[in-house]
Length: 347
Image (cartoon, rainbow, N blue to C red; front, side, top):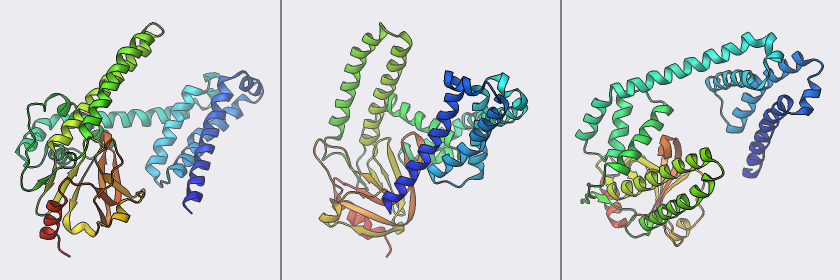
């Protein structure tokens, strides 16, 4: 059944790429130019239907989503793509239609700019509330943003980047605060050493490849340099988040994070079952399971898996959101977590 579903997804993706690729070939190759010699307007109309209706439907089928809003957005994007892809002499009878897509995209851009203005307008209040909170900054900042600014994927991405730069640049004077209600995830692993090794690899690659490509293409070398600098900052921030944010065990919930890549807030009463059997812990995790297991040079497994009563949202890299039904965790001190679980969870 699982293989059948994957095959369907691959089929939808293949059809989507076929539609886009055939239209690209039609207007950007000599073979396509021969086809366009006769009936160019009809061919352009067919391309419009492909980009505005067929391609969005195939994309939604590939992503297994049913959303009128997303379909309209994709259709508007298809109109803009048609304006770029199809030569104006073929598109001229339908040029008025493409302006609809451009107007929609401009409207969306204006709304996103308005969201950004709202974010920075409320930033002093957000920072004030973040500092006043007893929660770790990685949680309190996001919660404060959600309180003052409308939830939107662009806002999540911007806030994720702000957190990344804060931890990479401004958090080095802070020291980890370990209390009775905190438990670490990384101290019994080589997680930080692993990240430092990656940083060294990126720096060496930057020094070597940058100068080699610099002689071939200045623009490409600058792009790679910027990407490598960003990668180093991200890895440094990730190390700081792991060091400064152990799992926080509160009365109503616990705050779970492992670097910039994943974090969750889980209420004790949301936990349906707790698995600690060795055989289950070593099994391959399913897609509905998120793991908070610090990377190591050797293979590592969680020491507890929590099955939730209902799927719970987790925040991933770049502020992306995804729901999970199970949470696999490797605590450095499992006993401390078990004590909190017994104390706060109501069966």
